[in-house]
Image 1 (spheres, helix red, strand yellow):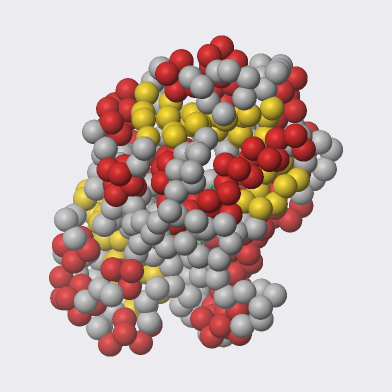
Image 2 (image 1 turned 180 degrees about the vertical axis):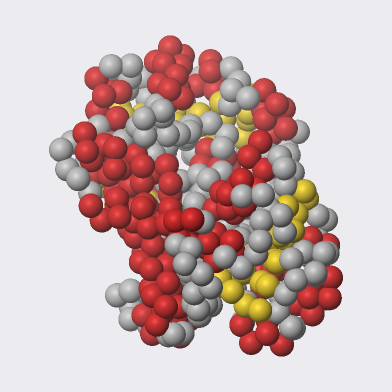
Length: 449
Ligand code: UGA
């Protein structure tokens, strides 16, 4: 089922957000052209190969009515709307680096007909106002933040929790028309995604939409850091955090999702968005004390896990690091807690051999980490095994086989994915975020980690 007369849209940026949006809009019947500056990526996409390894992208690339180009004039010819989905990384002083957004806006101003411009990138409040006043004068700028997760980008685009857009009321009809097949869930099942119940469409003013995106991510990290603190306290007091979280999650006001404790949250969104939020809140004269505490807790959480390892495993020991991606289901290791942990362990003189089912090469930050072809092989002669990413295959590991290959018997679970009884039965000592606190071994404080 397709919309009869689709719109023509240009999408700037073929990253997770741009590609997921472009492929979804093409699938529901719009004509889509994607402008990407990276020639290698354009070539791959033209060959209908997915550069990101996202579930479902390959299938849609093969079928969808979509073009890829690095020529702005070709991308924008005759468009009804242009979506900007470029990166907005952290700048040198914690502010947001808007240079990619600015150059996208300049190329639109130069080459696109007067049309609607939808900003999918996460941008500080007031960015849309500023663009409409300057580079994009004469264009109708709408804030249209995304809420998709890596590893589920296509499913989250076709069946989003909600669609948010904000701008001048005159733009609402066009944005609704663009999203109509998704709002009404009128599309053919694809790559395991089937249409569901209608999706709510929330139209606000532009600043509210811009801030809502940051507020959503800040709320989610607040939940995670709170859970991590409760896990730490449970360990100190001898409570069972897993049962405790079941109790918390059974209150619908709290909800049972996003409650897994760990060595800290990371990725390409949460860290940069919380930094940006803190930065532009201060500039606006407001200090976000809760979010600041959450960010500090997250840094402390990683150091706490590091200390659990370093207090029991001597420098120079060999550690099998299971996981490099920032979470399971993606090959992305940007701002990954696993990579940050690897760096800290390397700095302290440990020998690291890592395995990640999706991250198959080391980066500049992990160039001294050896890579093993499997989790079991990473464990060979290891003094300790550390789980740093919540891959389901690590939860299902044959722990007896792991123990047989190891030199030592310590297992540090940084994601609370293993059953301590099963670990013990395999002859391993269970440590980590959800393990009971160990009695003090010396006078060394956490700061010495
Ligand atoms: C996150 C948000 O979940 C999306 O809603 C949002 O659209 C996206 O950022 C964005 O701003 O673009 P994502 O970065 O893909 O999505 O990752 P999440 O699945 O949210 O995980 C983030 C981090 O939290 C990971 O390190 C993950 O391991 C950790 N996490 C998540 C936990 O430690 N415990 C949990 O229960 C859930």
